[in-house]
Length: 160
Image (tube, rainbow, N blue to C red; front, side, top):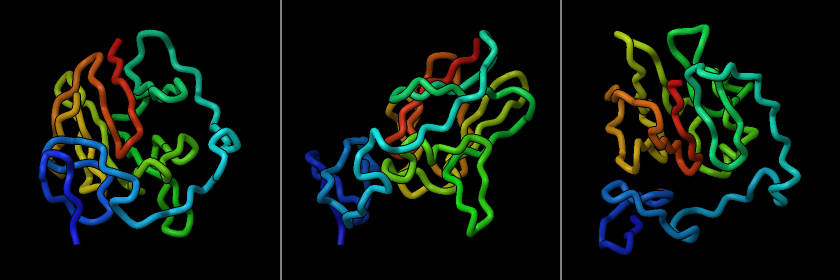
C-alpha cells in the first residue's frame, strides 16, 4: 500500500511527509498510533540544560528548548529507548518526538573541518534542511539559521 500527496507523489504507507515534495501527509495516511500523552499539555518537558550565548546549538521551535553542541564532536539525535539501550545525546522524546515521528536513532550532527554536518541515519520519517529532504547516510553542511526537521519536530541550527 502507498499514500499519495496532493501533488500525486506515491509514498510508503505510514509516511508523515512526502518523499518528493515534503508535504505533510494526512493523519489518516498511515496506521493510527495513540499518542503517549493524549493531552499534549500533560507531556513532561525535559528541562533544557543552560546553553551559553554564542554556543552552537539546536533550538526547538515548539517549546524553545535548546541543545548545546559543545563538548563533543558528534551528537546522536533521536528518542530514548531503554529496552534497546538507546540513549541519544539529543533526546526528543520529551518534546513529542514519538508523536512527531522521530526515530530512535534519527540523525547525527557533528563538527568537521570547521563546519557542522547533519546526517540522516535512515530514519523512517526523514530529516530535512530548509524543507529539502536529506538522502540517508549523506552528510550535509548546515549553517547558522538553517531550519531542520526531524520527522515533524522542527528546530533551528544556531552557530553563534
